[in-house]
Picture 1 (cartoon, rainbow, N blue to C red):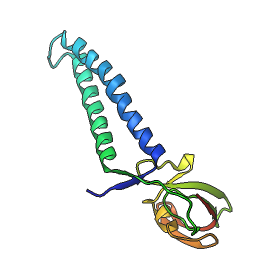
Picture 2 (picture 1 turned 120 degrees about the vertical axis):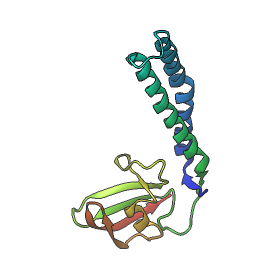
Picture 3 (picture 1 turned 60 degrees about the horizontal axis):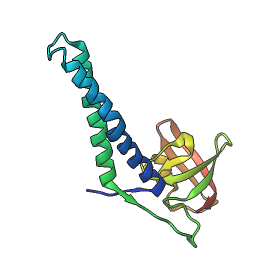
Length: 156
């Protein structure tokens, strides 16, 4: 099984979500299921069917989080002498087409959230930026079309 890089903060967030689902949400759903079961396990008992489906969905979500956590490898970065784009780096890039500047932290796919400035190293733009130095321009084929970016600076 291939390990997926993740930051400590991202791992803690995934783990906290798993604990919340197990300790808070699951007991509520099981209680609703038991309550609905009192009316009988029949095809016409919509309350039971709904509670059972909620339990299945919750269990799928818990299983998914457990699988993600088992694949994670926490990457702890230090101060690097080389100023190039790597996992955990905070970067500023300029979209050459629009002139807009974006600030990102390079993270793993499980904690990626572009709206909050976390860019996955597995995304098309992330793959194009990895290993590059400030001042370099890259052209990336994205789902929205071809984009050209210039790396303004890299911090750790």
